[in-house]
Length: 120
Image (cartoon, rainbow, N blue to C red):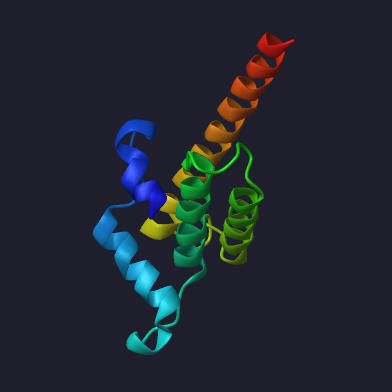
């Protein structure tokens, strides 16, 4: 939920609304409440949102291993059902999350290297 709370000042746009994420969140944690199985694209959205939350969490170090783990899980889930073969809104949302995580990771790498350069 850190991603949803900090997106107002950290993220330029939200790839998924909070109510839509709540549906996926409940589907992941309460599978018995839903008739249909969790799709790979919804799982990818879930992982990307958690990865972004871990990435922008100010209480965690830059390049947190948790963020990278969820990022890679999201990429793996996205690879299960190709977005080119099975188009869906959640597939596009997962791709937007993937792009956002990549750009944030690149930005954090740059800022970390600048901090190290200034410290020396």
